[in-house]
Length: 99
Image 1 (spheres, helix red, strand yellow):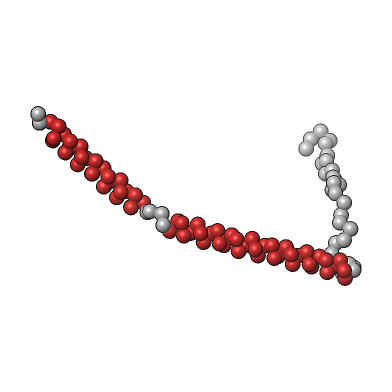
Image 2 (spheres, one colour):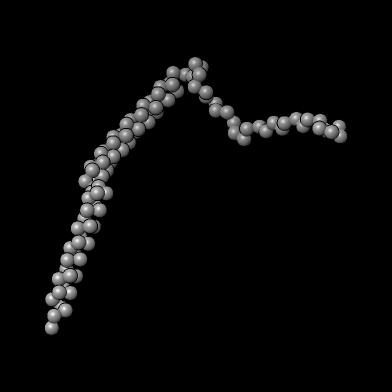
C-alpha cells in the first residue's frame, strides 16, 4: 500500500453471552451428573419413539407408492381411451349421416 497506510488491526468482538456455570467436567457433583444422564436418557427415549413413528409413516407411504400406476400404464390407458372415443365418433358419423 502506498501513502504510509499500514495494515489495520482486526477488531476483537466479545461474545454476547456468558459461559455456562457447569461445563460438565469432572468437578460436577454426582447428583448433577445423574440428572444430566437421566435427561439424556429421556431424550433418547423420545428420539426412539419419533424414529418408530417415522419408520411406520414411511412404510405406509411406500405401500401407497407401490400401488400407483407406472408411466406405461398411464400411456396405455390414454391411448386405449382415445381409440375408443374415435370408434364412437366414427359410429355416430355412420349412423347420423344417412337420412
